[in-house]
Picture 1 (tube, rainbow, N blue to C red):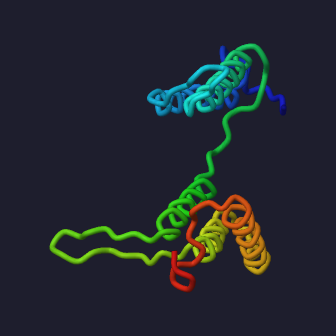
Picture 2: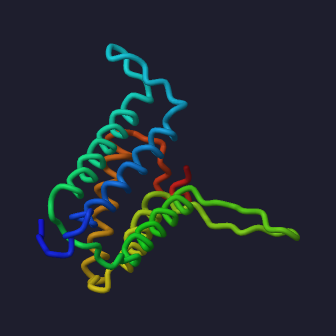
Length: 174
């Protein structure tokens, strides 16, 4: 951890405080989202057990960071970069909308439609969109990475795990 003199007040590590409060809020949100899932018992775990355990661990980490922010000197808050999280979020949305396609009815008739691309189309598309997250992206290398990851994901999720993910509905059907 980089030490500096900016944490001389009541809060000695503002960056740790912000991170800790964010993790506590994230843990509470995740716990609330999974509150309707049955946790089961330790002998027979239900679908809500893992989300609660992960939420608790994230919350504990947030509490430790928050407490340390008042006890240990640390870094000041840096400028927040939105480009990376923005394009990664857009890439996830693009993947979700294009893997099985979508149709949204528009007011006044008609609809907004995207074809189902399956994992062979949606995978590389999402990776290429995520490339806009960094100004240092080398597009040729990213294209090769996208093809490799798509082959790996297809082999793992479609062939090895036999998950019902469309391969390429346009070419192979569902």
